[in-house]
Image (cartoon, rainbow, N blue to C red; front, side):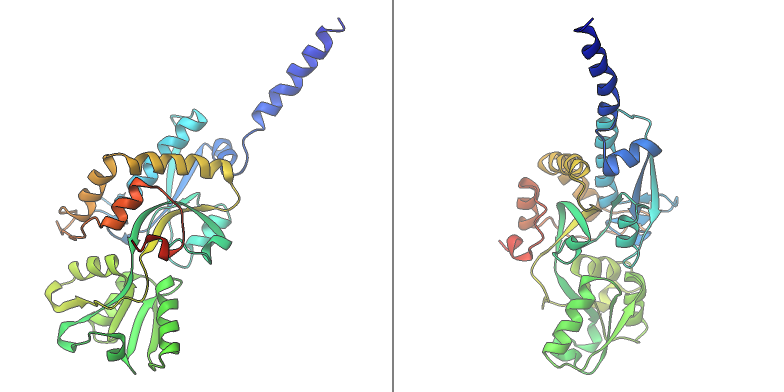
Length: 301
């Protein structure tokens, strides 16, 4: 009996301990049987609504692969994968307050944001440039001196624009737009001379315009290559390990090139536009060596 009693006690104590192993986001997902993805409705080729009002695109496909990994981790094949719309201003608050578990879009992984949230392995590299009308003959930031220039509120791009404006004393009036379509519309309607954003998004929004040939993206950049990452909550090592493993496996596999080609180099719905953004050598290297490094200089090969 003296041997059996401790054995039974260990069994009784061990059962709840095993169930209590899950913490943070994994426990939240298990308890609710629900993983929530933060998505965009107007951010192609990363996240947007197609003609069937379904959220699709490159970052969404990546997040769905992560969702599959979470289902396997929790042994919940029937786990509900829900989607919540976010924008540049709401994305971080909705991650930190627990509304959204993964943010699947165009969020730059940088040191300031890492004070509030965390990121998984980089899925895209971009640089900050501006788009303007060709007939305005604007080729550099200096050509924007004293003019009105738009960028998206809450983005790293608007901070770079403000910094360059102050340092170079350009006298630019900075206009904060709520999203990419609104920022470009200011240029399209002549209310702003240029729109500052990540170069890939500038290429996309110009391609979607009524007259794509009327616009030009600047050669001058305002940044080194900047990494996009899927955003998640800070200080959640167990969940981050699942997410990092899932993205690393995807990025090292041939499937990532297939996904990339599908959204960046082939016609996409609903208008059959081709954005023609080739896979850069820096991004190809990054896929082969998955990393959540937030330093732009790290990617400047």
